Amino acid sequence: MSTTLLGIVDDRALGTSMRLVVTRPAKLDAARAAAGTIIRAIDETASRFRHDSELSRLNQVPGRHIRVSPLLAQALAAGLRGARLTGGAVDPTVGTAVRLAGYDRDFASIPADGSPIQLDVSTVPGWKAIEFDEAARTVYLPHGVEIDLGATAKALAADLAASAAFEAIACGGVLVSLGGDIAVAGEPPLEGWAVQVSEDSSARIEEGQETVSIQTGGIATSSTTVRRWTRGGVVLHHIIDPSTGLPAAGPWRTATVVAGSCVDANIASTAAIVMGDWAIPWLKASGLPARLVDHDGTVHRVSGWPQPDTSPSSNS
Ligand code: ADP
Ligand code: MG
Image 1 (tube, rainbow, N blue to C red):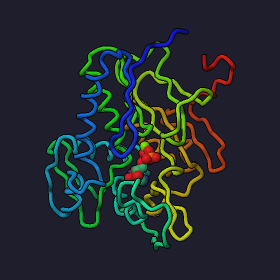
Image 2: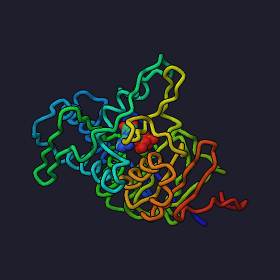
Image 3: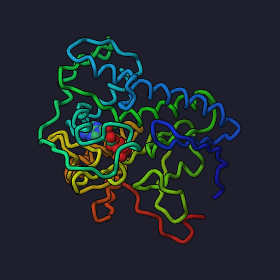
Image 4: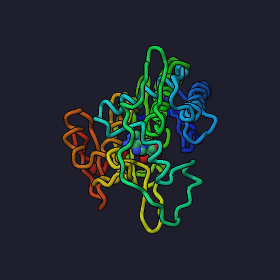
């Protein structure tokens, strides 16, 4: 089968790797400019690690009705959509719990090892504590509620960047990957967008690895294997079970999900880690193909996720 000639650029954004792919290589620069603009805007708006971001400023003024920008309103709506769709397994009020577990700054600056910390089991405040009027763009956070949009803002950035890049070039197709959270827009390559499935988004792209092909929407991976650290000999990671306020302790170390947008894929991948065994019936009921990896590395493909093609010609 002939393959489409692609234009590809690699960069860093939102504290992770970024890859932009277009099917019209001559349009790469225009697509990159458009994608870069929206990704920078998400960073300035919804980053928890920037003290000057609009989200950080919102978290500092509980107990007041605050009018937010259209982009923060969109990011909050995505976070609350995640909570609604998952019965609160994805919950943007995990902010304090994530910080207390030790993930209080950009991951690259978190010491891998350290002395013991005391973590108390307590449910997070819960997404229903957030008063959000989407039409008026007003938010009210009760005292003690800290919002973290880590699970949805990066995926939203991928969705918005792919759409913006496609609008800017008005032809062909675009793929945007932000640390493995991938969104596509426009017309896919003839063979579809072949995405290498990996537990670590920094893994090299090479032949012989499992790939999955998508035409539209997005794909996202949540994993407890990369963003993890040790305190007093106890391994901690960055995905919080809202019912305990502690790093999720379920059977999956990695979840990859395909959905109609990168936001929905990421909502489901984060939820799968939190839900544990319940993720399988939930993914099936939601009709979302998923690949779950348990702690001993066994792969479970559910809800129509394709079996890997092991034929000798599969990489030609
Ligand atoms: P990955 O970074 O592996 O792609 P996710 O997309 O699931 O993982 O995002 C994890 C991030 O989301 C965490 O770093 C934290 O900021 C936030 N988070 C952690 N637990 C939850 C949760 N239960 N609901 C919503 N956000 C969460
Ligand atoms: Mg993710």
